[in-house]
Amino acid sequence: MLFASGMATLGVAVAFMGYALHSERVLNDSLQLRIAQLERIAAMPVARSASSAEPQAVTPALASVAVSTRPQQKDSAGSEPSMEDESRTQAQSWLQQLTSNPKLLAGQVRQRRNQIEDGYVDLAKSLQLSPEIMDRFLNLLARQEIMNSAHEQAAAYSRPPDEAGIEERKRELERHAQDIAAERRAVIGDEGMARWNEYWRTQGARSQLRSLQMQLVDSNNALRDEQMEPLVSVLSAERERHTTEREALFAESSSKPNPSAADTMKHMERRFALIEQSIQRQRDAAAPYLDREQMAAFSTMLDRDLQRARDELAVWRASTRIAAQSDPGH
Image 1 (cartoon, rainbow, N blue to C red):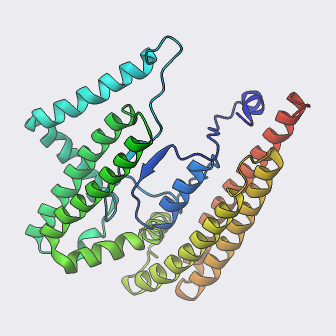
Image 2: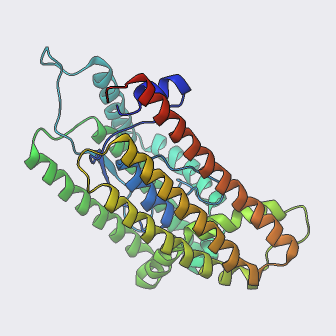
């Protein structure tokens, strides 16, 4: 672990996983989900915030299924660690209960559907479906999410034994993603799927604006319908630009097979600079559509985001310095 001693001293739980793919996840192209995947792979934590975090109640247009694709490893005695064995047993037991107990699954689906409806209050309006079709679609989303999660946990403790197994696991993921999309299309049709994909493409901005609405709830100055779509459009465009910039930075940084502490620190500093620039562009993009009070609330949200990113960078600087002091021969 590159920063192990520094992290222990600071008491910061940062998982440094190296530049190796630990899991495969079929993701939609919403900004923060894509960046989260890339930076999780690169062991570069993402600061979550009210304006950037994505709710996890619903999978995107395709399946959200994460499984380990590393070859299975065993301990020196030839058997797998007991903790991993116990976790595998629990995950497989939960999956078996869901598939064999309709009442249990129905209860889980109802609970997840409530979470979906609470977290995505504008979904029905965006998809323009009849109440009957929307009801079926919400139940489908909830069931898929419950089962995807259970399969994900079980698969995480069933790693392929070799490279051929890894490739087959990837093909299984692709087939599963296609099946998930086909089930959804069967309920809402091609036009519904097009609106669903657009909804998820702009979900980052919609989540950000929902947070802003919460800030304005007591002011009698909530965002109006005629403000929402232009704001969704300009903020989504900025988030997509930021995605492209962050992915380019990741590609450049990950081109080094054995990054040093200095390399990682340089990446984090450039990452912060991109975040800072994006936040300023968000201010500029939103300003024409918000009145003074609304803009003040939005700026406060963005300031918090920027401070979180600044604090995270400070932690990395401190941990790098302490790690270097603890390991002067590195």
